[in-house]
Image (cartoon, rainbow, N blue to C red; front, side, top):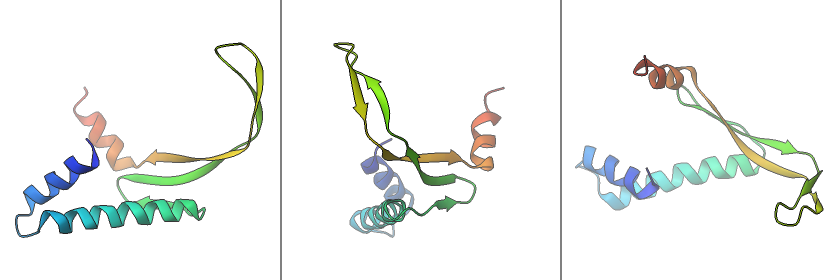
Length: 95
């Protein structure tokens, strides 16, 4: 599901809201999560999961095309850990 489909789905379930307002709300939520992660903070949505950033140390990598060694610099990457309720809902229908 992509962002526009999420907006459409929410707008369909809430006919009293304009689609442009739903889009602004979804964008605001995603922007706040992004801003918090950019500032090094953790974002927890109870029952859904937690977003955080992790540091990847510099290392020596390999160019897959040539096999040549290359230096890969330090970087920060987003990390998501699912919440207990989400894991339970995902696995409830799989048995």
